[in-house]
Image (tube, rainbow, N blue to C red; front, side, top):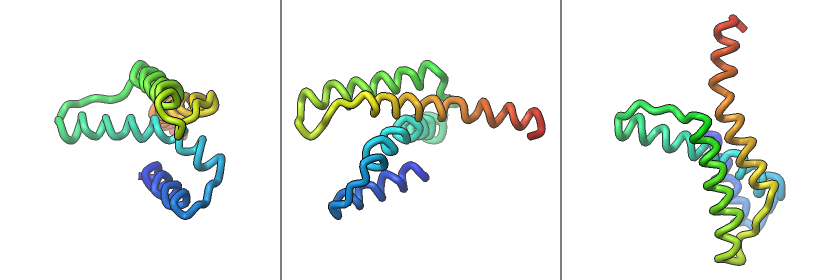
Length: 113
């Protein structure tokens, strides 16, 4: 939900002509993979009633997919898009944080921290 709120705020700011580079560019890319993972997990588990958790292969393929789509293909099709290696890094970092979050939570929980 936090990611969705951030996206909505960024969209509203852009419509008002307010552009904050780090937030408009890299923060939105950082939260894209976690939001994508959450949406797919919600659809799989709650809508389709199939018990599924994203694994490392899911996160890596998501980063590759989003990077190719938004940083390679879209810039070739439209001038509205620009390819940026920092966006790819943001996708990767967001996916990594989303992947290790449950691992760290379980580790701290099992150690009583």
